[in-house]
Length: 133
Image (tube, rainbow, N blue to C red; front, side):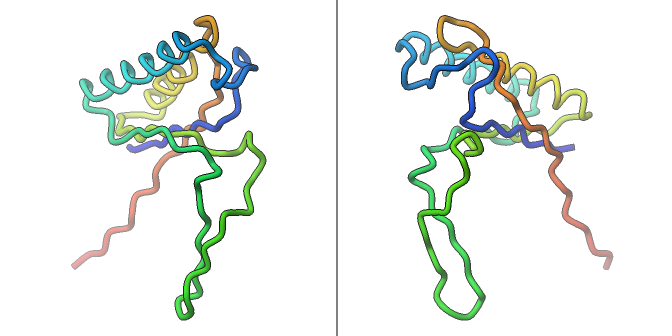
């Protein structure tokens, strides 16, 4: 079963200071923690993909009616706390394991090494229907 673990830009209960205001060593510790978790999931064969995303002001919204030229805009944007900051896609045996991984991601260190307690949305990836032949 595949799950996406979705992280927004909002801080958690242990993080009320934006990362841009952290000490460089705290940023490094946070990123090192994320890389270590990625290595762990790679070793267990559970990691499908995981990426941090660029700042929301670099994103574009595309709509298309299938006939005319696509419309590309730089908004509208949701509130900053609703911006997707990154994700992990994992392939695990159970929802419980996906929740366990999300808990580890939520405990990443923040300013002063305090776990940020970032909310992680855990959402199962829908399987594409198969057609019989």
